[in-house]
Image 1 (cartoon, rainbow, N blue to C red):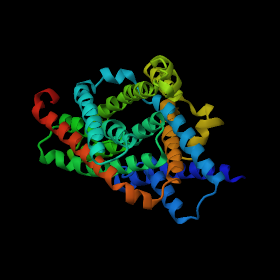
Image 2 (cartoon, one colour):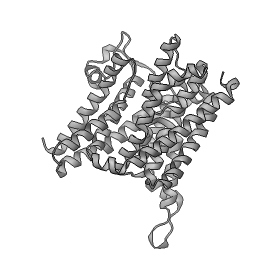
Image 3 (spheres, rainbow, N blue to C red):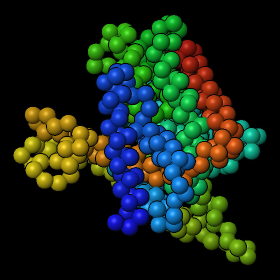
Image 4 (cartoon, helix red, strand yellow):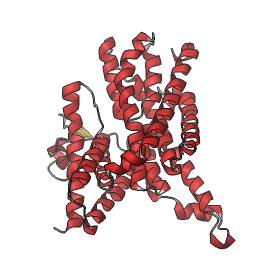
Length: 374
């Protein structure tokens, strides 16, 4: 095995172990403390800093993993989203979600300039805070053609505060006199990562004796759907920025859009549309699991097969998480701690500022419009 394939294999192994680690966290803490993608990023960063410097072939393998697996993970994630959810139980939160998206990007870009943080990092921090943490950062990084270091800084910038909110919100909500709906709005719009929202929701439900309650995740799913529109917006912005070529020759905006448009976004939208139409909502029965992807995912413990089989949507969700974790393992192999600590303090401060603004915005909304929220 050449060193490129070895690197790809290591990234896949780290992605698998990090994804499985979320099950252990749930068993120990009744919640996911740190998501699989972020854990894979941290472990690969540690390995990068304790092992000897990698050669060119190994780096080529980690680059392949970070790009190809990330694109594939984004496309598959589309199959877990549904346009129909916008008109479902989370629709009432849509005005707050849209406002927070605008607020997050505005604050991140403005504060990023004051802190001398790169524009790419600022945009990714804004997207990660506004929408869905690492998934948004990964998607935007491919559109913006961001460097691995910028991705790592953006991840670090939101991870600390995402963890803080996931642990604290379920206990602060009763002290603030919140109803279940108000907590759903607050947690669903102000906690970044979906796994963190799920963990906070589970804790809140246990504290308050709520069974089969998914209010916060319903709001979060509508918020995650906004990633499609945000990705298209920033693709358009990049096309507009690149429409003027060197020497003053101007390319048509449509032509530039076609040239810079990342095709994985198109397939991401197609998968979401197919899921909205119900294409992925059927079960694959055990009789058909003797071979192929389903059996592999089952053997590795990434999906659980019940008596009636397993839903295709769950298979795709598990595969997407695994690919994201494997991709970020590749990113981590490019990051040196000395670079994070010397250059990453400002992005982390930026993440804190953006997170605080969104948290206050959501809290103010559920307080001022308590009658509307319920």
